[in-house]
Image 1 (tube, each protein chain N blue to C red):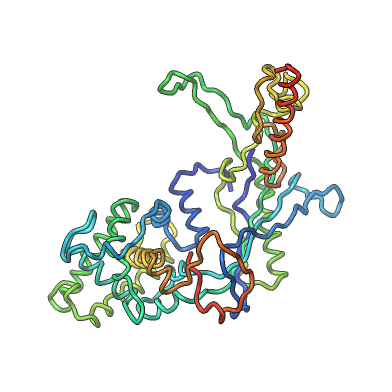
Image 2 (spheres, each protein chain N blue to C red):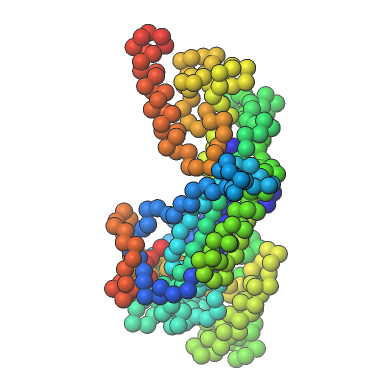
Length: 202
Length: 233
């Protein structure tokens, strides 16, 4: 290719590809800047607004994050402080077009919930919430594949990406669901997976 | 000059599902230059000089889940499982030492202290662009011959400096009219100034330059110590 003018964001996008492909430049920017989810942030009083999200939006995002990575016999997204992480990432590292898409999507979510049951998304039953989210998930999957022009992403892609990244880069995610290998440390190039059991944390 | 890179191929590898690794791999694989080695077999029609490959194989991690459909307990279970094996090869090629790739003091644009700023004007040209095509097709050929799946060439936008192997701009030579440094890395016009990074190199070659920087630096430091002892500096 010809030598293009490359800005910091493009560089971060390259870094994100090295980190495994699907992660957006904004997400890579935040993580590389040290933005992480911590359990302390879950002590944020319920119903409060974040740095970017309003109290109502925060309630929707929290509910969605809980469904995306639920608490099972191991901790989930809420235990890791993912909602506050999402708010900080949006406020500090995401682009205006991404923030606008997310805000519009959350608004549409509540509108869809109103049509369905006459109430806000966060107050639907868990099954109703999951049903709506499955619809958004299919939408974002198709939309993302078709979006080759760099148009604003689907809001649910953003919520999902941020939830997965927030959880997997947190101490809880890295130690409870994955094997955390301290650096520096030894390297073993070939071990039976059965001996290790789990994936290594990034 | 810099090494132009970010062109090569990636592939998925079937099998080895029961094998894994632990810890941080300190190195990758390296394929030394195999084009234009001076014989007819390796001579290329549309580019001179060559490139080496750097790369590695690993299992994909949770990042793959961002692009997939699904959420909830199933997604959570997948976080703990390594994904398929994948391998990448990235060419690191020589950028020819073009006279037009330059760095100079810009007297028209001053910084806040009134000092001239540095202007850099460099790009890759036809030889490098042709080489990048070969970086992709040769990597594809190797990976397909190895039986890998979903082999896909890639060529991402590159600009000089991204490889962080900057070299040249104060090249070494015998003639002060056409070079900046003498054979000991001293500035021709001012012999008590030594320049010991990659600036001395007249060509970037295609290999990683840090060890050469260090060797040049050790050699120049030795020269400076002895010259000082003799009272020449």
